[in-house]
Length: 261
Image (tube, rainbow, N blue to C red; front, side):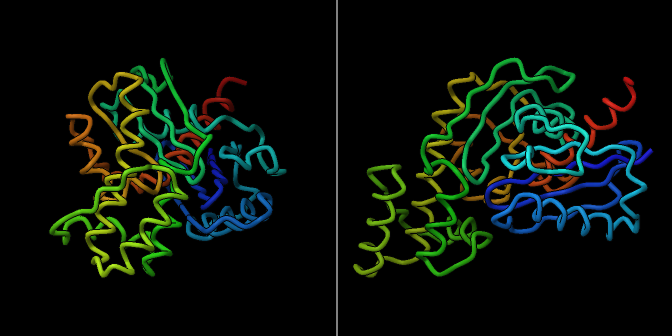
């Protein structure tokens, strides 16, 4: 049996094809304005990598903000549930998951089955989300993938007085005009991001091991700053791209739901 998970987020859409708990195909693309189109495109790419036709898929679960707009899925399940299962698959010892998405940030503790036992989410403000980093990277004229590396090359990170996206944006422009280096500004942005995430993560009283999912997990500047703020190590995952965690969890849940019928 072959199962699929499709995670349509506000910034990126992800899909995985799995068989016996192993990934056969995967894909990540920028999200389109219409979730259905994003889902179809990313699924086709993942199927292409797996060299499979869509009719080979036994069941598919959708997640992410666009999950209710996907006509080809058999069920739509929340991001928290899917990231919990996907995070446990990525790191079997994980008991705390920190997921930074494009438009929200979530922190939750899980049990040994990958079921959330305590969680908090922040979706009222762009700070502490992928959107915050996207805006700041554009101001610096770099890609989001390059933002994390600026922290390692910074000699004197800038301290931003506010975590508000609007105010930080104005401060970044001012610092650029004052001749501050992109490295120091970028490092300050990463620390500001980590500060916001740490406030949420601390509230769930994180327990080891801590696993970070979502695209921001690949920003070492943010991850290292977050470790200092939490006073705990965040385990890096090597099994698969942490950005795929939601889609992986969705595929695993598709298999479970199919098996329970």
